[in-house]
Image 1 (cartoon, rainbow, N blue to C red):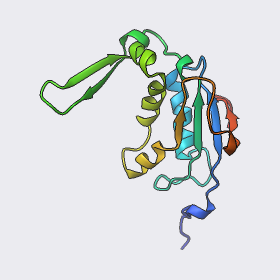
Image 2: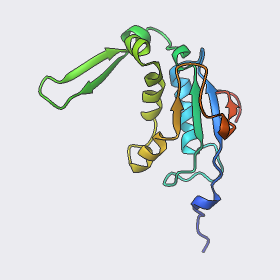
Image 3: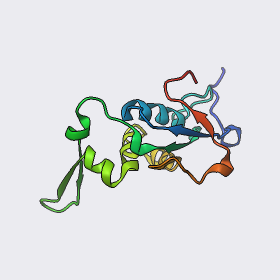
Length: 147
């Protein structure tokens, strides 16, 4: 009886990708990034193993929302205290912390487990066009293009 092979950590080849978020809708951008981080684009993908790649996102402040989401989409957080619910609109998040828009969208698409928390560390988001990861020799990645 044949067994389904499971990828071992020494077999996994990690790559670095850089994604320019300028002009790309946040939802479409984050689905492409989540696929890269989880490793779903690789033939050795297994849902219980971290076989994904690292992703650097630049120009996060220039990503766009479709429709009226900039003024209507609301992000919530709670302090845990009675009456501790805080709400902030996407436009205000973009002004204060532009990288959080992409981070929160991608994190919402990753597994909610210890593996998901490990995968979160593979995402590096920067509001501007510069990043400090040149030593890793990241390859450009265009979301929506054939990968």
